[in-house]
Image 1 (spheres, rainbow over the protein chains, first blue to last red):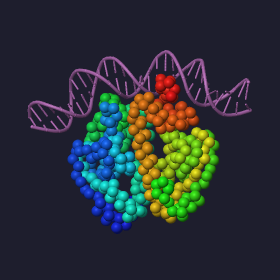
Image 2: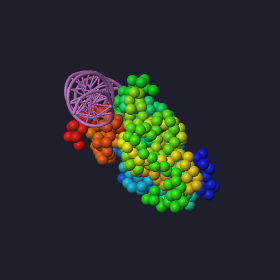
Image 3: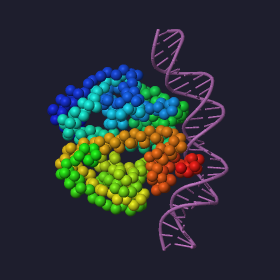
Image 4: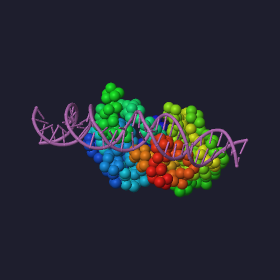
Length: 183
Length: 183
DNA sequence: TAGATTTATTGACAAAAGTCAAGATAGGTT
DNA sequence: AACCTATCTTGACTTTTGTCAATAAATCTA
């Protein structure tokens, strides 16, 4: 946050007080579909994925690693039921902030809107790039996008999740990988 | 803006002063790829599309109609060259606000960050839904998404742009439409 | 470590969408 | 209105990816 614009000591104290550090075990579901996303998590360490169900299939919508801010956007912003679930793909350490504590902070420290606006803008822009990626329509291009952006996590993410993240069948991903020589 | 939270008279006056109303003719390019997106446009009336080039093909990335706030997100937020162009698909009336005027407003009226944070959140969430749509992999589902969200503009948008927006070939869209009975 | 369960790979085939090309339709311009 | 141009439609064919199934590999659990 200080990288965006230095924050006041009082705001810093308020934030530190509100954020609760938690350990999350691999396999745990942080948010279940249809529940309201009442918390924002800062991912101090670990790996998460969000996914939703279309028909009888599970589709991985995002992959989030250390340093990411994790929410289910639609659900958190409007405090309505989520259309996706969030699952830990590895043991994680998160800093948890409740929606209501965050609203209190906005009330007491209106200048904090500045920071979060910039952060939201950044995430918005990243989404744009994801959209752009999904339009690169062939499997090779999609897999290369993944390699460019998530290379470090390749071995930690089951391939079936990578496949649905890229919107291709797991078999296609497997074939693409062997075609490219298992990069 | 008042719908989000009433704004002060002074802020309202500042905004009205900074926004410049402009007519934009059909076919005009509001933003050229590689230029920096120096303005934010509020689309009072009309229809726009943004697109970028992948290889030798033009891909429509967004379709924006009356009431939308129009920017090239990556370029505007960071004032770096755009990777997309923005074109008027119809005669438009826009209210233009420069990046620098907007920064002045943020400086003078920090509470304005609150409004724009909420707006950015809304657009962020809409992007999520677009991503979700592109994952509905068959052409029929994609076209139905378009009908649900842009039905009123169907006749005003050339089909080849709708096709690239949905990430399908124009021929496929044509066939999908005749299969569905030209809805 | 052994067994069970899940995940990944490979092959054969089917289905969907893409490409190319020709003709029809619609739009814009003089 | 007539022409020119761009867009849309349709058909034939190709390519890519999906699906189903069987096997191999890896992971988890007791």
